[in-house]
Image (cartoon, rainbow, N blue to C red; front, side, top):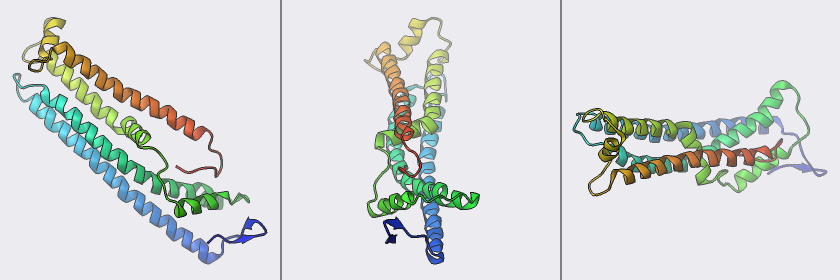
Length: 224
């Protein structure tokens, strides 16, 4: 329980400072565990992408369909990773909050009388919640990791259509190669364009959402 005297929080005693040090180590440990889970999901995406590339470019006659189907798997993996990132962000935010409002001020010898950060941190423990939405979490993972995987997927797909089974001589031939069964090539290419535009929109939209969420944060006003 927070100690209150004359409307202000009391200074922490040595035992309480030691407890905060242990608390900080615990938050670092939990954030590390969830960071490892994020890396595992990213590894799944990279491995499946490698399998799709190997299958598609195994021979000139091989279909480019695996590179299309891998897009659905990437969406599933991104959904899992966004969910994990929301949990990771809880532990990371708490550890970072203690670093900036407690340890940094202790190290530079410029500690102020603002104890609001302690109240905010205590409230986060009493009423735990995610600090960002699922969509913003997905956008962050797209910007930091998945944008490169998707770029490789798109480049490989267009490259496959251009060179196999032989180099395309004109754009019409290129479009014809994109056909999947009864689905015309132009429909497949249009869906691919929409697919990539959706990822770009998600990345840019959540970037500005993050900017708007952070621009009003000053001092110990918020976490996350």
